Amino acid sequence: MYIKTGDTVTVITGSQDDKFVTDKKGKKTRKTGRVLKVFTNTERVLVEGINKVKKHQRPTQANDKGGIIEVEAPIHVSNVAIVDPKTGTPTRVGYRIVDGKKVRYAKKSGESLDK
Image (tube, rainbow, N blue to C red):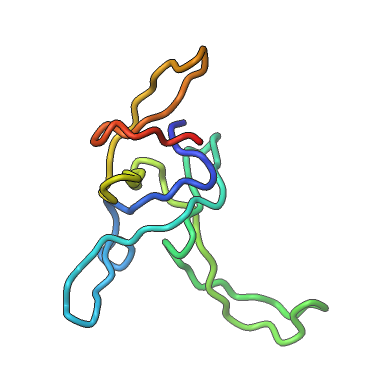
């Protein structure tokens, strides 16, 4: 899979609530977030602040009140794109061999994605 934990991604498809955020001037910008976890077997990623769902929590010793909490739900990897580190726009990922290692790079700017 071309997305790894810690990458910054943007939502390219899905519901309007998950794709765009509107600022005070009324301008729409794409939502971005950091990948918290990658589920390779189901091809899904957990992105910080994206695809929030409400979950009913039963009272426990840790949370004695319980109630309804908001948590992030996984989103399919085809619905997100990596953000280009140079331009800040969604980009596709390519691979190069550098010093005998396979390295990911952004197709738009050619910038390396791996540290």
